[in-house]
Image (cartoon, rainbow, N blue to C red; front, side):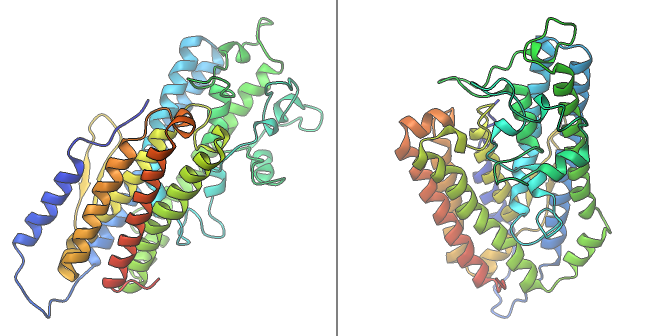
Amino acid sequence: MNTPFTAGRMLGLLLLTVSFFACQKDDEDLTIDYREVFENYAEIVHASYEDSYRTVADLKTAIDDFVANPTAEGLESAKNLWLVARIPYGQTEAYRFYGGPIDDENGPEGLINAWPIDENFIDYVDGNATAGLINDPVNYPTIDKATLADLNESISETSIYTGYHAIEFLLWGQDLSADGPGERPYTDYVTDGTGTADHQARRAEYLQVVTDLLLDHLAEVRDEWADRAEYRTAFLATDDAVALGRIFTSLGELSKGELAGERMFVAVDSKDQENEHSCFSDNTDTDIRMNLEGIENVYYGIYTRTGPAADVIQGESLAQKAALVDATKADAVDAAFQAAETAVEAIPRPFDQAILNNETLILNAVEALRELSDRLTDMGFAMGAEF
């Protein structure tokens, strides 16, 4: 399931910004008030974490139904809901890198979205039918939240036991296909004696426990951003320059260091699909697009909620204030967003084949995202952000 950017999204955002400034009076001494921008930012952050929690709750229901009665249809339902759950969470990546609730010293980011995974730590892999905690009841007789959380990244950076990608592996299995995702059979969970792969009941238990744990961690971050919550209250009381610095740091680091670098350049440079973000499900294309959309959400002050109603949260934005501060730099940011979106959309799907056959298109997107980061940083400095 690949979700493209909304048609005309950037054009609509730009028209919104232009219409706002058409009503402004020229005033060299204009004082910029960012309070409503920060309020809207906090509202968007909370809503997207709320959507992340809700979609994983839907996934958990499907997983519970599936393990109670394993069928091919039940496994497909769980897979589809995992893909849905990645849409809001991918957009929340734009709130990282400044020591907020997601990744401060006690933040659960590494338990939520760590990757790449060395699958050997969790379950069987090609060539090793007894690999992983699931197949080791002697050393790990109990599968519970505390055990998985304690083990996560305890051996190496790739010893991942928790989060979205552990669930992804348990649903899809290894991706051994040249032109598709993993093909784990539903019978890996059948416990009537006809199942495939040993320890089917432990595999089901692991899948349920790890999804419950993900819900716990998403609720933790969501609640920090709730109205009148301690962190949100402190954030809104922060000096403008410091708050702007946090936001622009997050946008710039996600665009350049994380998305362009770790998530795209490393994969195309190594030509190894294990280095793509969602390697088991072939969902990396959507991950990339949602990360960029998250950056757009923050800068343009708009978020479309995940759900049947697709409600839109919209308010005062950095883009509106940027054009008041320095119209030339603001125009450069707008152009960089358009170029990045065009370049990312040009990458063929699936990403694991693009890293082998379309290196130039990926590198074009990498450069566009780096340029976007630079223009955002320039704009942040112009607006007085304290980096």
